[in-house]
Image 1 (cartoon, rainbow, N blue to C red):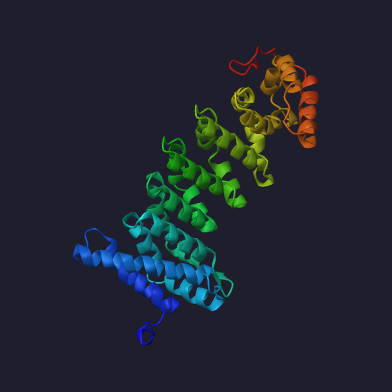
Image 2: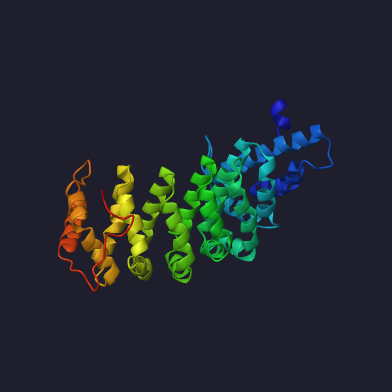
Length: 349
């Protein structure tokens, strides 16, 4: 008899509609009494789990395209996304994690070839201003950062952040003492600067001076993880064909080369290796400015001696070939103009 009165499962559309009904109860200032509010929040957790099952499937069923489409279309109606984001701080960590999984899936859903999430963000781009400050909150950074990276999958979102002052805040987030904040910000920063190549190339070209001034501060950070991540990402950016003009400009700077030469003698081998992949671009540049040539010549003997002892733990033919080319190029350089003394701070010991 008990089974006869079992409630009928909600449809995908009804799930989202019920979610919208429950979200206001997450506010600590809601007029409902505390006990009733807790009941509603508990119900909300169950709704989020049901939505996750619709999108990902469960123990007894696989997700169906029809159900996912209906849930997606309803979710991006009536600003459900915005209200859900605003409610995240009032949810427990477990529920926040389920929310990020749901949103991640919804960001990828396509309906008749259309990316509904991208269309929504284009019309509601200001929602990113709600997400970005959350990246500076140690309790919320993992959730907000994960959702933000899913938004950055869409070019409209990445372009908005790169063209706003928000991009400058990442240099602060990355160096935050909180590991959760710094590591999550690093992941988002990397996504911003690698996913949409044409947008990134345009951004770097237009903002070269201030961007690389800030970026070089990451390369010289006293924090090992910050230095390692920065030099690795730099290599990824400069070696990307879409950033060729930026790379050429970068390797014509003596100051940039000084930083890379110092990183070559870092106490951590992983940083030395990543620094080498960027440093090799300086001697390889066929249009090296005289000051670059003169510094390389002044440091020639120390550089050649350094590279003769610079080896990887495992044999790597490409690494050895690149190293041989660098040594060959440096060995054949001749001073240009006025002889240059060793550049201060860049002498290899």
